[in-house]
Image (cartoon, rainbow, N blue to C red; front, side, top):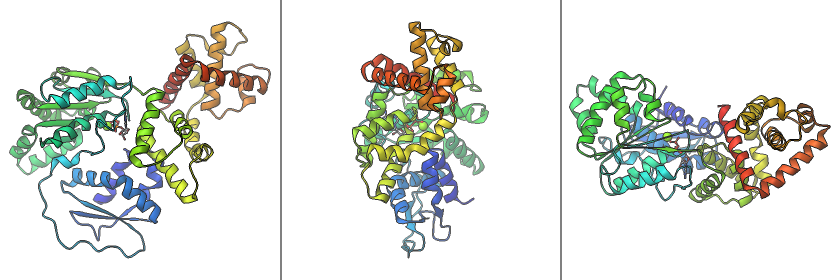
Length: 438
Ligand code: ADP
Ligand code: MG
């Protein structure tokens, strides 16, 4: 596989499946015209070319730099059209300029603060004001797409703008670098590089798990940076204590500073994040559409950009404004994919566990308050998250017929509008159910 292909594959993990299929997969890398400082990709049409230029070229450049160590100019051309020739002046290959590895839009300003991430935000902010002094290391953990990398890089961007040397790396990259220097017998340079930076950001350290040699080398790097009060920030998908196959001495050190978690965002925060992403990507959406998107995404904010790009691309293609109807139509497929994975059993299990009633009670004819409440919630979630029809639901829940279900749905929609606690409960359950299917 050539470097271009392998970079596109790396992107796959970072964006939604749909976005990958729709855009990135359409690209082909030109080995013939690319060079160590210039990468040419072909897109099948201008729409895809423009969208990739606007949305991904920075990211692709960033990945090239991580992989090859070179600063690379990215060109996306349309297949079949005359392409700009490879630039003739060969830029000197410079030693990796670490600073440009940060995503410049990952700033504090672009980060939406809500109660789910406030603690981590405040911690990161204080670190950015007093590097090496307040919390060292700062360890941020939480689920996928909750903004860990964004926050960590926000701190990095602050330092970088102050001219400090910031290294942002993954466990994999750290290991590759280590192996490369070992092989080339340039371990001095490796040590210098990591131990002389001002700030070390290391992402997804759960991948240190069971990598004995990397842990060993990371331990020494950690020690020497911390002894000099250089700031270290790490992220992971879980608390250091919970990372299996991690040496005790690293576990304990990871907790020396501050361990801050990020929780899944509440609906309000999701809405605010969507608004922010619209602003950054210059996509205009009505509140109605934004609220709709907020209800169909899981907690993973990474999904948002995929959805926006999809809506935007369709609207451009069809020359229409993005109305609620339009959005619902375009995103139907997305929703369907999710629904396919959720069964009524999962809904019953989660609902009964969370609300402390038995599944058999939910399906009974009992009119006791608590049971009616749980039944309504289960019906609503089943209607929303599974492909079950009203008659099927009526049968499952032992109701007379589909009008009884439709009556229940009406009741629930009223409650959702007027009862904040109820809405939050539903939201929470929905999150648990959609998270459990993964
Ligand atoms: P993680 O590293 O936790 O998997 P990322 O930091 O990569 O998640 O975030 C995924 C995407 O969601 C990024 O585009 C990021 O900018 C965005 N995002 C996540 N949380 C927020 C937030 N609170 N405000 C703005 N954008 C956010
Ligand atoms: Mg991340």
